[in-house]
Length: 196
Image (tube, rainbow, N blue to C red):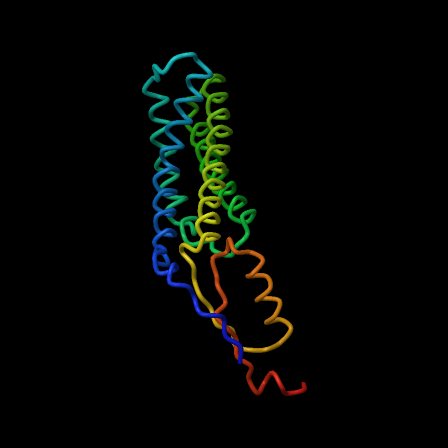
């Protein structure tokens, strides 16, 4: 059996595991709707030069907010992404964003309330909001990786098995400290010594 060396007394002052993950999750849950509203206003300002939105534009923003609550509220985007691919998270987020704005375009087409200017505004809004929400995910992931590289919000693990696959897992987690998983040790079993 192998065990990791004991931890220094300085590690007692780190944030308890899960606190940062919860904080980052809350930040993302709050920032996504704010990004939708702010980018809607920014797109309108870029398109029309002012912020005097008519009732129809406010209605489209409200509908989009409701769609986003339905789509994002039921997704796993706000759960822990520890050890998972950033590319997979961004792809899932972009898919949800396409679903939200696809539903908005379907609504606009169904009731035929939008003119060319409104359609261009929604397109600009989509691109601005998608870019901003992807950037926010990158920033939060970077902050989480930075905190984990400095020892905050770490999870510990003990592996059972002394196979080459176990060693690959250990090497991968040591090389990728951003995952926030520290291996405390591993145990060999009788099954590891059996020839299959």
